[in-house]
Length: 198
Image 1 (cartoon, rainbow, N blue to C red):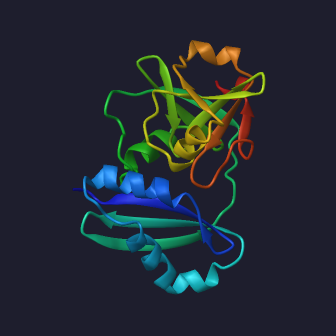
Image 2 (image 1 turned 30 degrees about the vertical axis):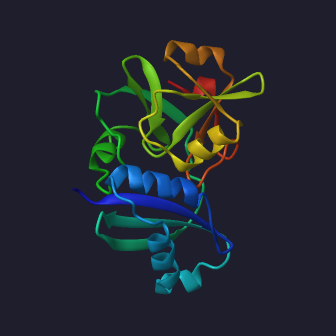
């Protein structure tokens, strides 16, 4: 199996959504791996002592048998101004692989600040680094046709904050805004008007 990637949000010494990371690791590997293997490796890493304040992205590369590497990066919300609908084929991306070259090859063709919004069989899925949440009249919806089982998305669904539905590219005009969400981002932290979808 190719190396996998799990990205944790570390903020003021706390790691978030561990239940959902646990679920995804087990689903990705097909093994009963305990998330404590990840949290203990993170906390024993020398960089952990430097990441006690603020918000950090902790990227763990792993295989079913071992932790391969851990990287700590101070987090800043990326500057995204436009979303470019980009058609993909089935099985484009379903596991959180460490190798992101297929995303990078697509993104390098786009202007700075423009993010691909992947479309599969006419349905909205994800961007290259987030799930998406659409807002309409104050209600929040997320596509059933997501690519990656995002931890924040799963948490928001379980709490009843967002609701799944089919969303086609043509449906986007009926929504007001689009929120990009992942382990590091909640709704309203990186939000674009629907007109930002090219």
